[in-house]
Length: 187
Image (cartoon, rainbow, N blue to C red; front, side, top):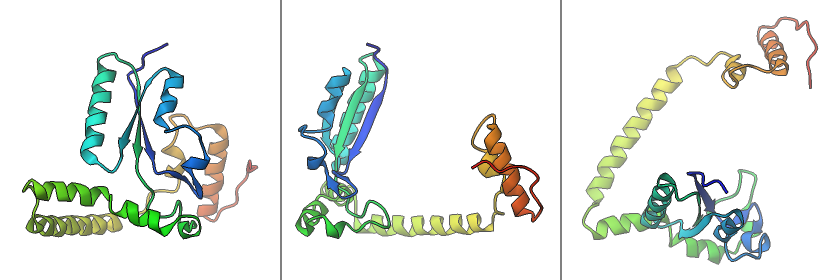
């Protein structure tokens, strides 16, 4: 087997739209499946930033030193819907959501930093102000930029554009300029 220097990272939020992981596999974890591919599998608390960094560091060092690939499963929870059309309140117990809210990774790491005396309310206030100002400047700059040319949705994808996309680009450009397209449009 080839010992590729790869780290595979799976953010396991425990749901595939409305189907919980427990109904998708009888395996005790996703990480255990790595053994079938001849690689190391590790499961980590995906809401513990320091644990994730530690596991990633070890996996990267293993890959760099020729130890082969590692598959990391970071167990977390999808707090919101799978998409804007998904309503998780129809299939998830609200108590489960409340339990995972208490494990919020940002709040957990913030509490850790506060406990170490490395984070204060003043820090958060200062950084929030700075970040909001930077976002506002960036939005203003982005809104001032001209729209990209229509053809870039075709030309910025492939080094050599396939013929069917070239035809579609000509069609789109003709429509965009209000001219008649003189070719067949492949579906």
